[in-house]
Length: 174
Image (tube, one colour):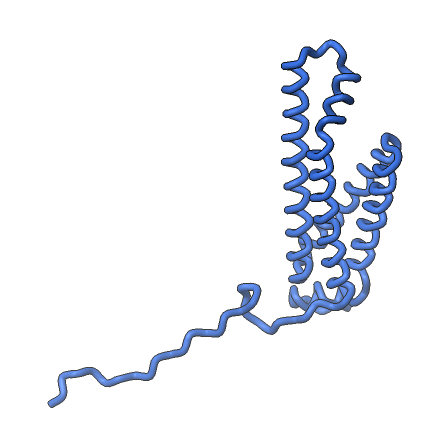
């Protein structure tokens, strides 16, 4: 008499899914891929913007000193440092938001398109306001940012994009 239990075949592990979710993988249309590429351009422009601020701290210090002649050297250092730290934090957050929105929209998340729309609209409004304050290179970059945000939103709302978001969500479009 054999005392060992019978051998049963082992069940293979399910294959991993690229985005962590089961189901058929739906490929994003070119309109979504173009929006994603432009969002990465937005991330690069945001990074470039705060790198420029870091490289031009000297002129920033002079501008703050000119606008606030009553500050002594220590106070001026504190204001400049606080301003630069704030800009770096905002810059890093902006880069992170661009990348996050690119990836979640690439995956077809409807909520991400809504968030991207709100952020894009805010970006356009803030940039339009900044256009009234800037000159030279700043104005040129602001115009590029407005065009970038508007183009991304246009791509996100193309008919093929709508179909993609609906297909990923599993809701048929009427």
